[in-house]
Length: 294
Image 1 (tube, rainbow, N blue to C red):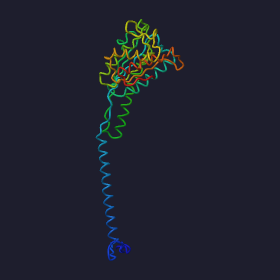
Image 2: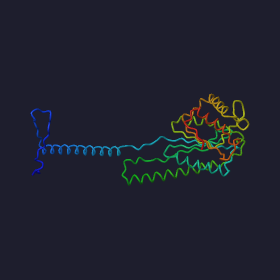
Image 3: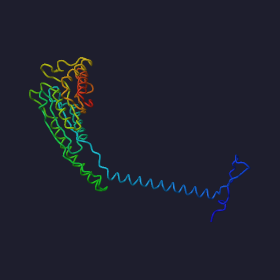
Image 4: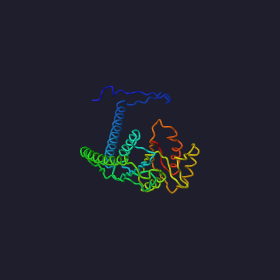
């Protein structure tokens, strides 16, 4: 039964129609049409929302896990007479850096870690080479329970392998060089090592645990012990001149971090900022992605 009020007619005056003509619209018909239109809009909106939701769920199930390529980590440890890792400050700083780099860079099967000793024969001083063997399983197709179990197992295996890497790194850090090679420091020799690593296509991360005091005898070499750069201008000009003779050692966007063994209270004579500028300029001229001090 239709409510009596719906049977009323609404009169709409249209002044511009001659002879005072009035047009009457039944309110009940108008209201019914309006309600039907609203129902249709609501129905279409609900169906559209449901379709989007189902499509989203389907896409999530089919989507493969996002993975990154392997990381190739190079650690250059200074084993010359000017760096003493037995000092408390140096030992604590370097141990923390090694712990952090293992946690950050060893994440999946294929991640590689190599250690070279810096001294008179750096290029031939590879002391350690390790490759991660823990394979992270694709868990996207698993249910929640199996996914959690598989992830926990993978995390435990990866953490166990990281601990093995870290123990070996710490052992290499503690090695003392008592040979004659400790008398000279060939940091330039690290450049072809980095270049070769970048040619593998991996993401290369380089860590220098060194005072960066290049000290080699002979023509066209630098000896910062006896003749360091005197100011910023000289540091930059030397670096750019040296880079021109090393273009074959392109660093191809390698990420480089330098950890100096100097305390915050050290003097400029000990921690020469011009030497730091020389290295940052040289490495950037050769195409390093970033050069940062830790």
